[in-house]
Length: 420
Image 1 (cartoon, helix red, strand yellow):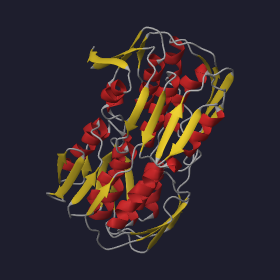
Image 2: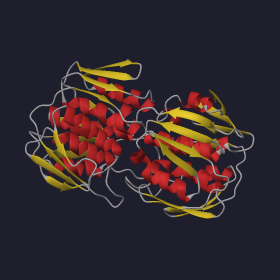
Image 3: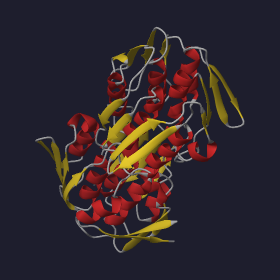
């Protein structure tokens, strides 16, 4: 197991070219199960989660070829329908093979998923949606068994107390492309990653309308073809590196990113008094000496992303005043708080709300990463701390950030990866 050593005190400055979106590429890879034809995906990040999905596709009869940042997926056999526990347990996104398998191969056996420990992450909406399409679903021995003689389109409500489900929307949207008739998904997720998946499905011949809105309409087809697609940039990586730059008193240019992907983040930064400039498809940020306190509430897109909540706590800890963070997507996503407090933050949690006392200076410590985004927030704290911070369980970062160490070093950070 690896660890990361971070020496604080360096102002991060420069440019970052983003990798492809992790949250977009995984469902797109799963979409290749809807066809026997060749599929080609570009701008694919070399991440642990991507390699896990490659293994799942190979178990399900695909041949997958990596060349630089491109993936080519071909069909070897379409007889397998089992996604095993040993692979699915490592990441929740792998559960999105359920819909394509059921639609194309009429049956599926998919392990209930794992991933980051950030609170309750039910898959009941996935199963509810597939049952609405006429599938037979049962849970036994930690697996979801699904079968159907043919899916039938239907209008359905796909909401939950915590908002729409991104992967649930993806799963039902993919399954309904091969269903008979029209499917209408009400309270669908509006995330850019869902829109990117819809673009892929349309290239395959699917008839989809309304992606990016709370109501998506899919008219089923009998057959889908292969596709060629370039994955969108990773907006969470963009937000993470923005935090790194501002936390250390530096400046950063994020190239080739749609401003609409980060609207709520840019608004939060401006409310915190930070310099943000949009220019020629790039976002330029620069640390203002004073950081204003803020009240941040995570919401489904286009709201503030839950995947940047932990990182922004580092900035709020530097603000001059009291801030609050309300987590409405994953109410228990606060496992990073004790570790930040060990480094000098003063954060108190009250249910789904964290109260952050600002004007804090971080100091070096040995800390433990609990999940992917918590790992990134500990790196942010270490970058602006005094001395050397050691972050254990570095494998979490490998799941979601490509070339992480080299990108940090290019911006002037002093970091070193090593074995425990």
